[in-house]
Image (tube, rainbow, N blue to C red):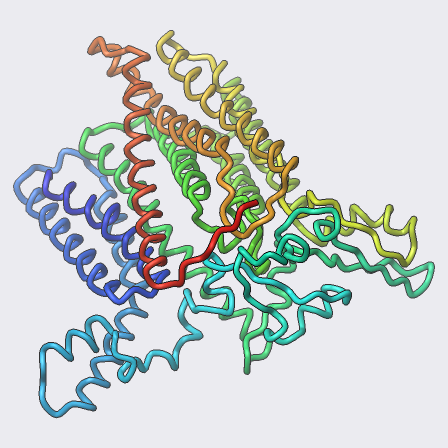
Length: 542
């Protein structure tokens, strides 16, 4: 069992994140990392099989193994593209060489470094990390040619109108779109009105070219493809990238499941309570890690690192947060009554939990609506109609997304759960701790919006608000303490005399710091690899 834990931990929490980072950079050693990942998985599966052969089945109906194999099958399906690439390079190598040689085989087939045999370029439309004209956007900003045409006209201009310049260009202080001054930090809105009975149509000529959820895909086009084909490829690419990164979180879920099976917990009447604490606490834990990765600069190409999106072709992070909150609420609304007979009255605890889920449901809907650019135009229609067909300046705050609803629902959840009635005092205290941690995240996220509102992002580089570093820590640590507050864990602690709040909190803080350190190493490694393969970018004084 120890070998199984070690091998699976190395596979899913070491090799897999490194492989994801290398795939995003198209690193030549990515294939070796994939081989190492599956080798560790094979050793882990062999160890668990040997353990089951030597140990009696002490947990009837365990589904940990079957769920683990589903995760492995999903990873194999996602590796199909790598397998196809390898077979194509192997076929090209065999076809073009009459005599086998180890060094060319290693360079051409294994590492894929020789351009002569890189035939996979024909299938680049299937690659989820296909480079674009904005591929080096993190290294150099993009400078858009000055124009007074509406945004919908400029979107159709050829890419030749976009020029790349260094950040230390002395003229950037006057004309660069990422500089927040009085002349170019405020865009214009163009209005056209066909008649008094028709609605006003206006387009935002925004210097940062921000795009929002429901218009992100409409104008996306690929050369030689009609729009439905381009849309389908865009969706498939996004699904591939999302599923690949979801494997890490699925592995975390399997870790919790393995702990439950190995310790023999969560049986009979404890099942629903365990599911609630493990799933919900795990979501907050993962949410905190992702937020910390955003603070470090991950997803900056999407504009999620409190920066200006280099391409402006992506949904906002707040829209994704609101979508997850909506899905979380709409599912949990109906799950609270699991195991209850028809006609049984609603208990006080059920009403408490259902009302929290309903808050997530509708607050998520409001959050998604605020992030929609079309809805924003509707909300501004009254003021636009008052001035008629004229140009209206966009406020600087339009550069960012200031959506308080994700922070609101998590803060209210923390405040409510910190006062959650429990049977024993120790259970009340531990609920109070993780509730206050979630509330702390909400307060810090609101402070982030406050400071970013005062100084909207001016650069495509990550701005790293310090409040987000603390907010992510509070959120992840709160989720971990949420898991620790499971009824069986707290009762076991009281029986053994370990019902000490300082011990529980310190253990959660230590694990969170360790996870943050590893997240920092992965993000830093990805940045280091990119800096070795991309030109250095000069930084000018503000």
